[in-house]
Length: 397
Image 1: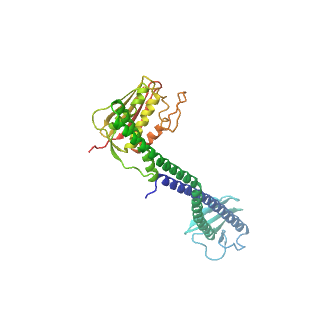
Image 2: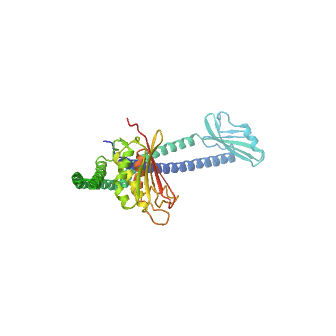
Image 3: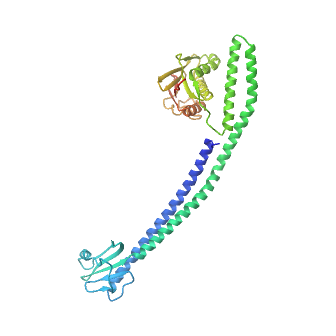
């Protein structure tokens, strides 16, 4: 069985924490290595400059240290053939006056050299240092830093994994307790709801006239409540697997939802009606979830519509690809700044009356988004509100 979305989210969180720790440790090692390399390079260059200055000061009479050659107009040291291309005649022109000094690093014949040209009392001397061993030292440092980077990365991945597991464990425990609670509560509620539903069915069969119609609504309501409990139980047992989609006639669901709220609307002196053409409004989805969407929208409209007002559920086909459902009321409305906040859990309106929008609209948006649809709200204070639900249309055949 594939892991559920919560498990996948926790796994991604663990890997994200591990990756972040590894990245931070790797960056710290890389920065420390770059600083060490820069200090070594600066020290090598400073040593080479001091060595060349001392060589020119002592002159060709003193044997230069290893890897150093000295060239003057009358002599060179040490004896033996110098490196190819040495000295560099054009550099003499950059020190035309006594006391002028010029130092540069140049690659010649595949090797890097530090060249110091100095004019001492009108005599131009060139001291050249071959950086062979310095380059080897730098290569050794880079190799050591690379090994340290790999070891640090492995250590960071291991320790990061352990720390991530410790950090995520409280969330895993909370998720496990939540699932256990949902499963236990759903299981305990299922039996009394089943008995209530059966008794309501028996009463509906024995009743007649207006009482029979009211009991039919009661039977339908208990069935819907039982479907909610079954969905909760299945979601806890199936570890959040996505339910199978079915062809759903949205117009029928709308008429059933309006019929279920008819008594409440009548008691509140609110006119409740469905406006639709006699054509199919078929979408692909989960019937119980879409039924709860309609119930939540009607519950919200009834809660914000005063006596004497009206609520209209309108269905239409705006184009060949979508089915649109609108729930329009003549209630108190909401400020223009609130549409995006309506779908937040327990959001509070900004019109000063302290009204909460509750959790229903937040669940509505989650269900609609999960069905690949959209929902929008529009209103003005005191002029009612309109919720527009748009879903992909399905082929009834």
